[in-house]
Image 1 (spheres, rainbow, N blue to C red):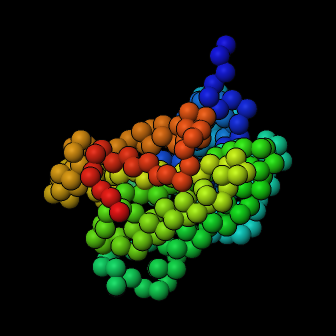
Image 2: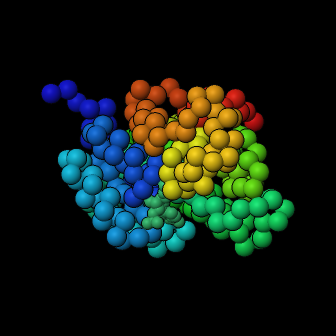
Length: 255
Ligand code: NAP
């Protein structure tokens, strides 16, 4: 039987018990990787592990609230203990706790957004990269957003945090290239998950207005993001680093 693209690899995906994170864990697992799923709630971790096991994916699950130092440390420690190392890291966790004009954002909300979306990604990379280095090569994938490129009103601070991740991707890519570690990003458009359900769930004026700015005239599916992450994790993208792939159904966005 032919080897799968990610056979022998270990992949850690944050916020992976639902939505894009879960679809990514499933995709990487079906492509041959051993996967580690995590999120804040034990019952969600348990459910995700059972689902992936039912598809014969080798999986380990643990609680990890990415903003908690002890949880981040445990995620890395337990992965290394269980699977012997890390080759692929997908930083997927993000929050958007409030909606409103940018300059009405409170300092507390601003801090929460940057703590989870940017700082936790940076701090997790500090823990994970030395483990990837031990393997001789590997791949980091950071989940950004179309909002990094396109100023979406009412979620301004979230958009700024996602633009910061483009910078983190570029700087880490240039520093880690000589270590054989590639760092790329994925910027999803509007994907049908709980996170964005206010935009797509009801077939009303909000959903129509959102669809009108998408040339493909439909919202994305989580599997359509997972496929791009798998590409970036595999040798199919071996000459690519420091880039972020936009998957938006054709929205003509740019910085
Ligand atoms: P989702 O379906 O709402 O899933 C959220 C997942 O994150 C759940 O597994 C949740 O589980 C976990 N989670 C939430 N807060 C966490 C934290 N602090 N630490 C660890 N896990 C946490 O979200 P999604 O749409 O898949 O979003 C995933 C990523 O895609 C995010 O970075 C988001 O910004 C990005 N994105 C999404 C869209 C979209 O349209 N959906 C568009 C652009 C970018 P628990 O509740 O158990 O923690």
